[in-house]
Every structure is written in C-alpha cells, then in structure tokens.
Image 1: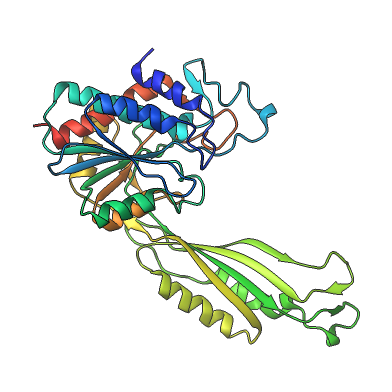
Image 2 (image 1 turned 120 degrees about the vertical axis):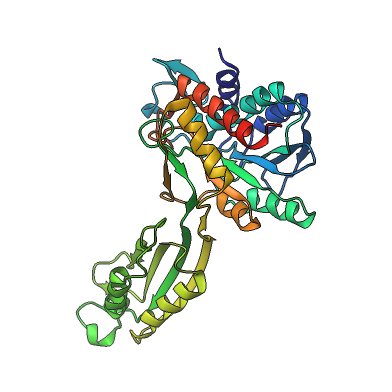
Length: 376
C-alpha cells in the first residue's frame, strides 16, 4: 500500500461531516511535524483549521485543502459504508475520497518525498487546511488568511487540491473562479380572494415582467478566461396553502455567477434599476459568496502545466468553470493560485471514489511542482 493510499484511507475513515474535522488535522499535524513543520492550530467557532509551515524564507508555497465532507446521503445508495474506505477494482471508495481527502493525502506525501531529496529548499512550504469549505465557509480559510495577513505572512504560490479534472488526470487546471452573488427578494402585495382580484394585489403579477427582464438581461460578454455572467432564479415561493387565495407576498432567491468584467456594486445597481422600473413594493437583501479571481500566467501555472505534462503527457486546459472554492479567499492577498486535483466525476455523489493509481500519479505531480518552484 502506498503512503498516499494509506493516509487517504485513514482520513476517509474519520466521519468529518462539515464543519467537523473528526481528528483528521491531528493526523496530518503528526505527519507534518515529523517533517519539520511548525504546527499551528487556528480554531474559529466550531471550525478546526491547521496552519503548518516549514521554513521562513520566501517564496512561500502553500498547499490548501479541506478535511470536511458533505453528508453521505441515503446509505442504501452506497455499495459500501461511506466512512469505511474500501478498494474495489482499482478505485478507493468513501465519502471524501475525491473531494478532497485524496488530494490532501497526496499533498502530504508529495511534501515528504520532496523534502527527502531537497531538505533545504529554496523558500518555504506550508499547509492551510480547514474543516469549513463544504459549509458556511465563514470560520475557515477566510479567517486563517486574515490572521496571516495581520502578522505579515504572505503566500506567494498556492495550490488548492480541489478535484479539477473532467475525464483523465491532468486534463484541467483551474486558474480562477467566477464570483457568486445571491439576491433575496421579497415582493409585497395584498391578500384577497381569487374571484375578486380587483380587491387584491398579486405579487407575482406585479413582478413577473421584471423577473423576466433579469433572466433575459445580457450582463456582459465574458472575456478570454470567463464565460458571460449568468443569472439564475434558484428558489421561488408564494402561496398560503389554499387554492382560492391571492397571497400577499412572493419570495425569490437568485444567483449571479459573474466574471472579472463586473463587480458587486455594479451588479446591484443594475438589478435594482430593473426592479425599480416595475413600480411594485419590494425588499432586497444581498449576500456575496466571493469575488472572481484569476491567475492567468506566472510561475505557478507554468510549473503545474509542466509537471502534468512530464508525468501524464497531458496538455492541461486552463479553466475557470465550476462553483466557488477557497481560492477566492487566498487570491486577493496577491498569491498566484491554481486548483488541481483528481477527476471530479463522483464528487458529492453516493459511491464517491478516486483511482488508486490516480492518487499515486497526483502525488508525483505535486512533488514535481515543488521541484520546479523550490528545488535549490
């Protein structure tokens, strides 16, 4: 059994449903301390965070990841117990195998292999591990980054181990992510009988034209790295439970995934201008999940592509597709950030799995990235 597989199995066996860590970070800390890393637990609220660093000189290369996982869902849909890791037909099964305990295990093994050959690297290596990536993401990486910034500790290169690949290991590197902005809209009407609509004010009728305009709006054209901004209604609720009552309110939740062509204030102004033209009464509240970020070029992208090519022969595509990641908290500090990890076909599904050979190749790629950036 390889060192990466052994550690991945250990981590998967720990029931770390977000925001729980279930001892995963203690196990990682033991491994890293033995390699000479300075271990610093950084708990905030119910969240467990680990900052581990070896060396003081720059540049600082950081592996970032998370030990929390999503709930397993209906157990009858699993072929084996989700927190009892099992290898079948060359695949390691278990919740978090791909997202992202396998990557975290590969990072630790890669660092160990690199340091065995390069005990005095050019610069420093760090690990930023949280148990708050799959949940609210308010007491995890964002708080650790705030702590590091306050004391002047700056990350130069950050590799986030999110599962990035589509069909084969090495086919995709994420070099950025779109921003995410949620709007919570309440449209006010007046309750009444459906047979007497003149005595009521239907909030759906009042706002449907403006909601349609928002859905049809061209927000931008995107750019070389990002697709056009997307507006999607995610939840729509109204009604009293009776079939003959016009309700007095409509509640809608919508989301915009936006590129670097836009910012939050601009989006808010445009949405509110369209809604304001409808002449109805409403309340609107906003919640931002993060701004877009992009690492278009630089040493980290070059080293990651070269390492992938050397170990797999793949010419990795540079992508910004998908949802948000903790990279959105690290990139604003000025760090070069990429995401690279296993094939993401089974993430958040029953029977989540990752290839055993894939983990070993991923470990070799992570090690090769360190060699290209930090070897003396």
